[in-house]
Image (tube, rainbow, N blue to C red; front, side):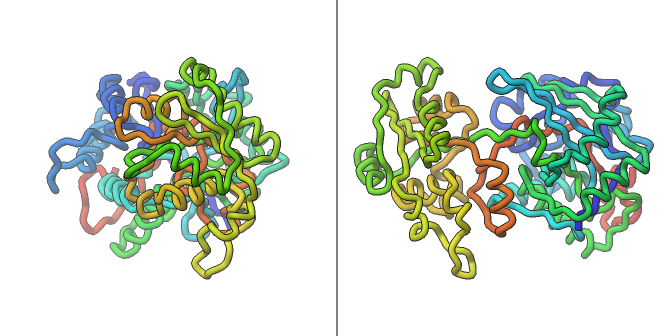
Length: 457
């Protein structure tokens, strides 16, 4: 059973330019982007979700500073809590490959105790510990968890459109990828109930935000132990999520490519020799188009998928790239890891391009197993092939870039239904849900350790 609730969202007031303070999700804010966000505004949301690492102490660290920033921003009127509990239609207009689309979602609180939320990706301990420290200090769900639900008839979107199609949005923001983000508020009890009633019998599926979901559950459990008391719907057990229909025409998935580096004694010819046991290898004659940006390797991978083949592109250092096409998917019956009970992975899991890559090429041939993936010692991830090629060219330890087709939403559902997990970053739903458009703060009225006055605002 799915239980969702309206809430009194926290948003930036009109005192700041929204475009200068909203950000990508925390895990996308790396390197120079942190500095860029800091320079845009002293109130940029990266100070909360991915602050600069300074000399940290138990009494002065990035998590405490995030809490202090939020407290001072409240006092200055930079951020405010909405007066009326609402659900928030969140629409995103974006363009991919020359086609402009609109993805429609609704931001709500989802009850973690009673709702069946299905995952499809593995998580890492480090990011969960990091997010838990932030939640512990701020008492906030600062980032959106991206959730999918089935709605082939568009029942929920019709409710959202009844407001989004007739009223001005309460917030409009623009990101660095030419996407426009619009937010409305629905406080009408009947409309809210229509959405609640439709979603109640359906399971929810995580599209993006596995670490934050597990962190929210851990935080809820900790609040139970501490005996924390809160009011309204803004309770520790109710988590900020944005729900998008998996049948929404505006929903697309992009691939995430694997950049492999620092493999001891890596040799291109030896690698291809081992690969030939499982894959047909087509050497692409020229990499001139790769350098120019018109990448024939990407086109070859896409064309293979259209023909129903399991194909992976691989680009080595220098002008060397090829297409690997799996000879027989049945090989995964023997090579794929087993479930905890010893049973075979589902047919869907065994036939995913991303699991074929990880099982055969990374683990079996290159020796990059689950432990090394968890330690993040040999694999980085890139949305754009060009970024991966640049890393490959610039990094003396670079070995190869593996180029994938995207995982399909239906595959996500089937794997999650089977209770299985794909490798990390198997999906990339574009665009991201921006941080800072609206977020949730738990409304504590009793908290044993009393972090600061901020927690009782």
